[in-house]
Image 1 (cartoon, rainbow over the protein chains, first blue to last red):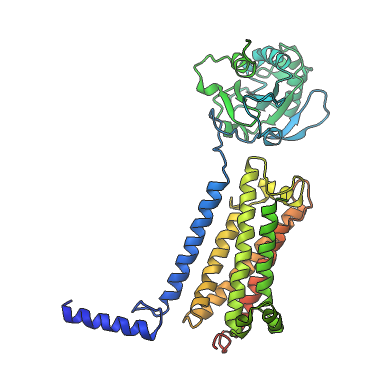
Image 2 (cartoon, rainbow over the protein chains, first blue to last red):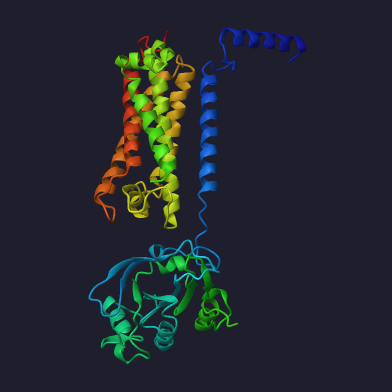
Length: 245
Length: 200
């Protein structure tokens, strides 16, 4: 385009601008309103998104140490109870908890277990000790899963029998009476996750698998992040018990 | 209910109510008495476009608040609703606060929905003689009708499905009202598009 053509174009543009007010695009006389509107809406939307995301601070959620634990939901059974009650971990959290406070809020010791798993069977006694020793500082929750392994086939009746240490043939791989397991009857909640809908969120690597959660919901200790064999009971003691002066 | 939620509720209600008022010529004297005489002198179509924009603004405002509350309740608590209030109970159930068959929360969905409606209304407001104006009004009418349907689904799920229900959430009611008002205005303008309601 030579200088003369450019001058003609400029004259046309200025005439169009004058005649059609704010319509500056030569090819589409309606474009101005839509572009202006588009910019206004896009700007407004961007501002809203940024403001909401920045001012509603949600910590990242996951089973890794330092993150907010995934919400553990499902039906739970307590010792001596006839039925199952719905449970949500987030309902139990104390979001205002601080590490150096003398809060009475409890930590969470979450054990993923399988009634057919021989290691969980052996750990039942240690769990009894944990439940007794830390009763005033820790809420223990056993999440009963059914691993997709030959010979592992659990049921709600089997979970109850394992928890209450009552007679039911089917524990520890199928042929063992649940009443013969080590330890006492477990007087904490057993959560039914036989279909692994909750366990997947916690990225468990097998059973037994323990995650320790602070009263405010932050994961403090994840067994999968420590060299094996890790000792969850010792980890709990280190976290919960105040050092003696 | 937090002070900020009360302010948002009042502002959005005012926006929706003002939008509805622009639909009726009988409201002109009231506009004059409120010092909005320029509003009563506007062509009916432009006045209704302005009303549509304020109604959409009200809808966006409550949608933002619903989104914020839903985000806060993801981690269990919100400071924007009184504990055990309809607002807290209705918006804290994450299982029933998403559009069916999607994973999109109602708050975020309606922000995006009203943004499109806002684009349509603002384009027409800035240039009432827009060549595709009729199409814009038809799209706006259909979209706001869809918005009503989705907002009603939200209300029904809060009344019938939510644990601890039935509950009524004031913000959600305003959301339905905003969709309804926006639909009514788009419908009215769509019918009048070929006439001279947009010219002085």
